[in-house]
Length: 457
Ligand code: PMP
Image 1 (cartoon, protein in one colour):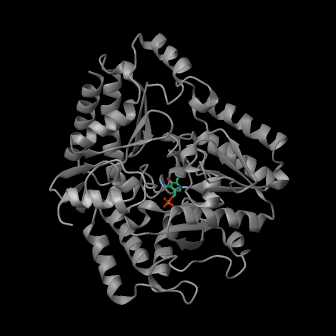
Image 2 (cartoon, rainbow, N blue to C red):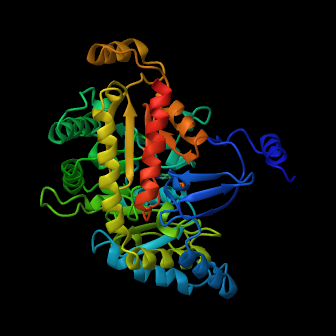
Image 3 (cartoon, helix red, strand yellow):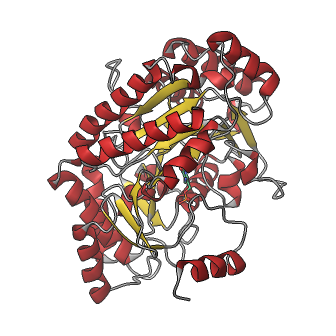
């Protein structure tokens, strides 16, 4: 097994088809914003391993901290004794929590496990059974997390019946509310909150509802930031009825949106941070080492029976040491400032493409926050042709080719840049490293523009 061809065909033969793959080839090493493949090709990475390697691949401080921890203690089982990196990580997380009430932690390996834990905790501590999730939300592939995942049926097809007691309310996303893309955040908020109130009156009574789970920026559902006003409204509903608000920051957290947490919002309405009851984190937390976390108020987590939480590898010492180094590096290297600057450049460049008369008909929307940015194309989503196509043809007078998102992403990959699609809509997402340089950002935008022009030519 030495050539790329041999490895590729070995992988196709021996790795399950149940795992999808977007780019051909076999990765060998990666540094910063570039991934090198076995055949020597170098790819500019605008995926960060799906929003994980926020400080770039193989960040020297993170790798060094992990290597040093490997020589000290690899597996300090959290149900046997505390271990030092676990406690050090909590001490570093406490000052960056979006709300001071969030002070009691536990760690896992993956985002899905952390979501499972949050759901179990909400049921156990409220004594209620039902959970409300958002249409378009993604929370993972394990059974509980899959049950509250409503971004694509592809994640649950063949795996039913799902966990019972799950109710779905629309995200304040114009598509889901049948409203035009130009709808104001206020109108989106009001319409979505009305639907939530109806749900609580018609389907799951507040007295039976343990939690509402939400991503502050819809990730796998299409990269849609929730208006702050909507989050404030959710908080009010939760306060009124004693429902817990679970905020899933697995993808949007850890600096991705230019603040430590997306829930911090832009402060645009002056009403301060929306307080989560339970916050779930993973992905960028340890820059590639498997680690996730759940944080809540001590009164909430302390209602859990000893032994009801935990797992063999949960809160691994090497991952915790890596996460400590991530927080240090984020602060020392002023990464949040970089996110804000690069985000301005990225959004301005993409809006310029949207205003270019030759490309305008193909681009329906440019949106996002920080370096969690998306372009939605005007192609009809799968199976929606009759309504959608005529709407777009009316608006633009152009026949819009199908499948633009995957065709543009594929062209980017052929041209040396890793780029992902997302959601059932025609969306490509830009999730570069948070410390990406200006030159790398310009290259990425250039490859995207060339690919789009070639695909629609
Ligand atoms: N929640 C969100 C918002 C996510 O984006 C993801 C992963 N894409 C998960 C949960 C699940 O995390 P994991 O894949 O680590 O289980």
